[in-house]
Length: 370
Ligand SMILES: *Cc1c(COP(=O)(O)O)cnc(C)c1O
Image (cartoon, rainbow, N blue to C red; front, side, top):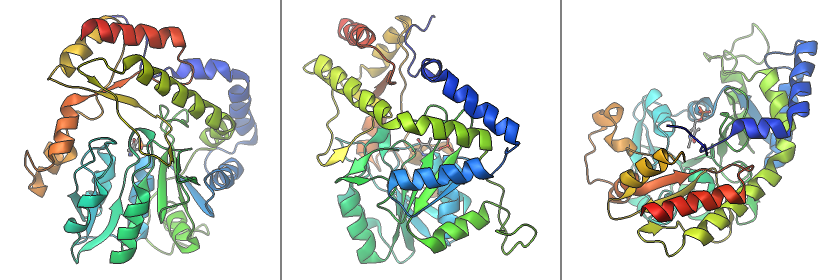
């Protein structure tokens, strides 16, 4: 079948800034600054400034941002880390990679984010950290979460891979938690042309540890102080991101406007349910996600596919029910809100270049098929 409206259109974005991007790539090649180097340092400064955080360390991916954050905090075998089961697998995978145990907490119905009221009952002597995820670009309830963390002496490592540019109570995401992790995966709101990621933090010590770990345990070449890995950002990606970040606020504003239009056109369309957002936040709509009730989600998705409208299910299986997580001993029914969400959610096309005519075509098609 032919896709007439894709869920995301990266080529449309490239066309709108082609000259800038082409020059950015050329500059790095002419300077032979391919791995690390001045462009990467400039990006770190720019992101730290953009996020109102003191430090930023660029890495190879959002997954590595989460992994190196937990590693730098000393999370290890025997520890427990609390997170949501309704997220991309990387969030929990990195906990397990370090030998620690992912402990899941169910989500809020309205926001799809971790339910802060259910966190405290899961805290044990072994708990070391909480990883809230700002799912679909909407910040988690970070005020309550950081209060709980303080009370129990836990770290907050925020998975903001979908939320660069978002605000929580007038504070920029990246300035609130002990460490915030971002992804520059191409389809993210600020996407590279390959893999990339970054952490922000206000702790000099944490930033230095992550900087060491990502570079084979060394700050000074051949003076390796600890065992680390290689997780560096390419200069070409850094310079592409330096170009793109100048457009990010405008692009996020367009996403908000598209979301508003979708919500206006789809409200009162049964069995569609529009997601609500919490107050005091600036959502950046990495995804625009609706619920389709009454078991009609899969049929609607197939109908839209056939009409050339690409949609996605984020996420079809909550993490506790994945084969890879079976060893944790969770079972169906443990997190009913997340499990219901996985059967009802549908993410619609959203990207800054999406036009009103296309939004109308999509919403009309949805109305015709439900
Ligand atoms: C994209 C994403 C990641 C992983 O980022 P990569 O750069 O692809 O490694 C982690 N968590 C969430 C919520 C994401 O959306």
